[in-house]
Image 1 (cartoon, one colour):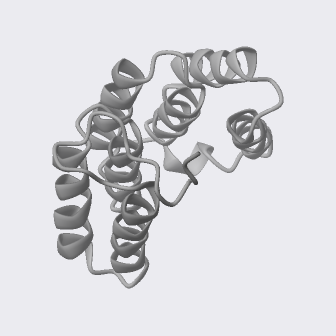
Image 2: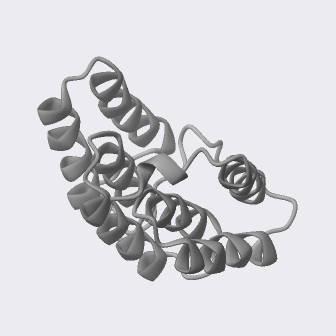
Length: 145
């Protein structure tokens, strides 16, 4: 029997445990939180190369672009995540977020509703609901280009 810490990430270029992948990604998020976007980008690109079949590094890359106001690049990363994990709701919720920031409400609503339909009781659905709530409160109206 394998534990989460010892089980490998499927499709990794080199043997990688979930714990190692988590630490790597957390390092990137830490750099991002510190405003060290270049370092965060390097970590996330490395993670994406290490785990080419995982959507998680692509979501991290998209989040990094979103934080920097690069909404088109963020959406591109979230689209890659969608292709890598077509049954996952989280890339749809994140794509909806990028689209809201871009002022593309109809497309954003489609993505957010898709996330809620795919996994209604998930964190992705809660995230989608919170984005919809923010939209209703007008918080994205200032984000339009």
